[in-house]
Length: 243
Image (cartoon, rainbow, N blue to C red):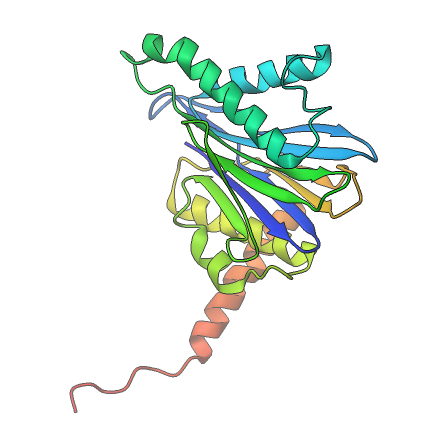
């Protein structure tokens, strides 16, 4: 399984994905689920993927080949992020139409994506593409999108994330969301690939791949855990309901 998270802000985007993939309870591998197609100064497009690994990798490979060789869904040439999301959805439909019936006897060919980024001339945008190839767009009211094991990492985002949250604040919340998911679900695991994109920068260099022994990751988890414990200690005890 996996956990992918995209956050839309007035200040930009935070995109993150874990790297866990498994084919059984004792067969775990680590794969990249954050892919980047950018033209410095003109566009940054980030694609997060979840689901059948063969399906999602085939979609990404086809999109890269289209972009490298001027194919019909060249992400270097689409004029809007809506067109980019449509290109991902159309390619996903193509892959499932080709492979789905062959995969069916052995499992599901389903795949899904989060596509975020900015193309010159419009603000940053964020989309979630479903297995059917259709998609929804994030907004100030629905400012984050998730794939995979979403339930454990959701509460902290609902409590603390705002559309006007600073980029660094949102990145901290994103990582704590992953911490919550990993504490409760073995199908989410390190490393975490994360990108902070500042609106109108058209620069994708503020990215990292965090391993479990990363100093910042360790310090963040420790400080958050200690802070929660201290807060609970300070909260008033429940009244005596037997009275």
